[in-house]
Image (tube, rainbow, N blue to C red; front, top):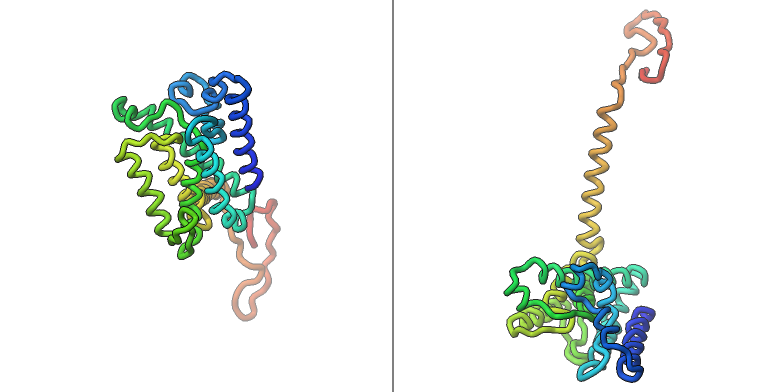
Length: 256
């Protein structure tokens, strides 16, 4: 977790210094953000770099990276202790990608008028993963409390309601967050699918699919196997019965 937080901060500092003091071309930053038109034209790397960049200059730039780090600091350690660092980081990166993929698909597949209302010229930041983290934390700590805004104690269930509600209000209010309007909902879906329980729903689905595949493979193997023939025992049944001489089968397909 600390390595991921240090990476996010280091990328922000490097871009901020380069753009604000090093005279770097602003396209250095925009080439790393998500943009549906650019991705459709082949710049697929944007889906993978967008989670790691945050607003490098101007009003709100410090708050953008600061609240991303604080969100990780307050919610992620409990899950890291339960899951381990490898699974936690994998979960966060997968959730970030699912969130931005949802934003890209919404802008690409919805009618143009609706896509314009929900879309952004560019989208970036780790906030989709933070929404996933909040959902996963709440589903893994039912009945626990967390300090909302570092002061207000809320239950896990109330945290889910707050995260969902605030993002719905963003749509109603025609807000255009830097991570995109649809990204948080993709992140919340990933939080439920990859972190909602033990095992989570995505793993339960995978296990069910794998079990069905193994059952089909076993059925095919049984159908291809030669039939077994059962031979009677070496003695007749009844008083005074005499042993019967039987020749051993020539192969092992017979069960005696």
